[in-house]
Picture 1 (cartoon, rainbow, N blue to C red):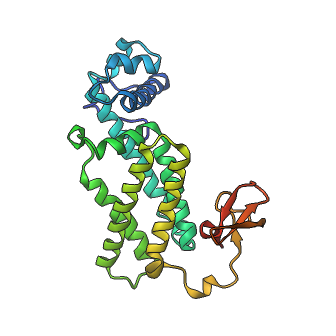
Picture 2: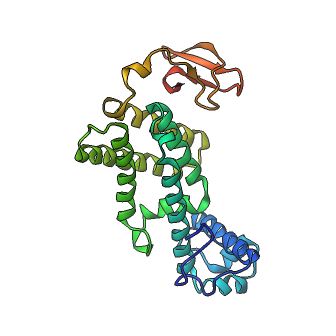
Picture 3: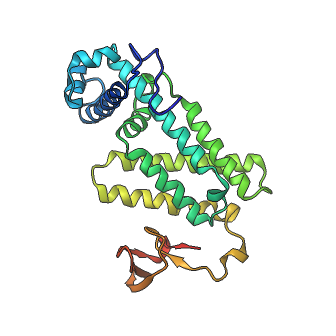
Length: 260
């Protein structure tokens, strides 16, 4: 299934031309915004069509009802998550120092949930699971398996059951914080919460899949935002050294700094 393909059980007709595919995309994105604003139960197909800038008759050409729209959103989210997993489960990512690897994983996850469809599907899954037809708890287990596989690659001496346990704790804890982050309208607070996911998982996994001692020698400190090594000290905050990046000009404390 490609990013623009949807199950025939949810679409009245399959869009064959790019124009039709784009229209379906606009409807799904609009539906996510409407569901977010007024809730799924209150939302109507007329509201969704208006948000998408199309006639409701055009919407009905593709979707018989509101439930079919939501189910198509599920399929889109599944496809995006599968791409997320396949893109990140590579030797280039897995062999990075732990902090950098977690930074890439969390950054990619943030980008995933910035999409309106994935955001609303994630939130609804934890509030109204009875709405779902294509997503269930097995998807959470797939996420656990994905991370367990990465942990096993980083430390082949770890028993399989321990890798699974570590991955389960990471997935459930990060999902809980992610849910809180997605629900807040405070963009700054949302960013701070997602940054803490990286710190939390890195600290938790360090004893099991951290970098070998030899990798910790002579590491160059780099900016967590742009990965530049052109840094300057910028005072202290709560007994932590602060830095400013000479390239992107962003400030950060030592605890969130990446190393290479």
